Image 1 (spheres, rainbow, N blue to C red):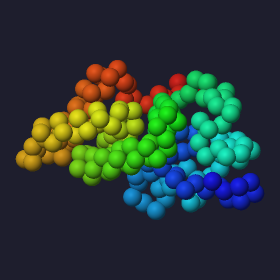
Image 2 (cartoon, rainbow, N blue to C red):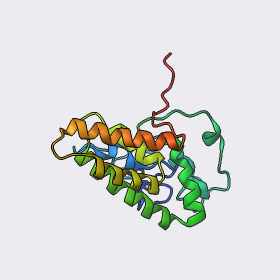
Image 3 (cartoon, one colour):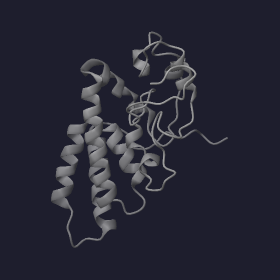
Image 4 (cartoon, rainbow, N blue to C red):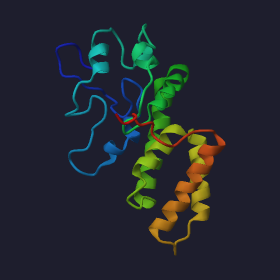
Length: 187
């Protein structure tokens, strides 16, 4: 992370300062040039959390801050493109080390890219991003094995995408995980 007065950047923008998995966000996987580059990536604006971290020494991730969890983490939150519930990944990073967590995230990103390439019928990007974000890696691998056994080459992309989505829903149901983003109630 760069220092105060310099442009904010991060060596690993796929895992944000606040704990969001940028590498699993639909905006990160847009093929256009205007896609999101992740937390601290080129062209990304500075957010409230970044401004806060710049005022603390040696804080690359919020969980490293002596004030964590602060009010910003304790308030009722709603999701944007990525579930904020994935901040539980801080526990893994803290207990097993950031390099271990980055390896898990890289594997999840690879699986997500495979899903988007092979099982996205144009309506499943956010769903797959949410599923890969919230499910444990071992559960995702189990679902991927189930998908490879269940899909048929003669099926349409839409049919195979429906099979894949249902298998993720089944696993999430077994783990009591909601794969729906939490939206702010309408005014």
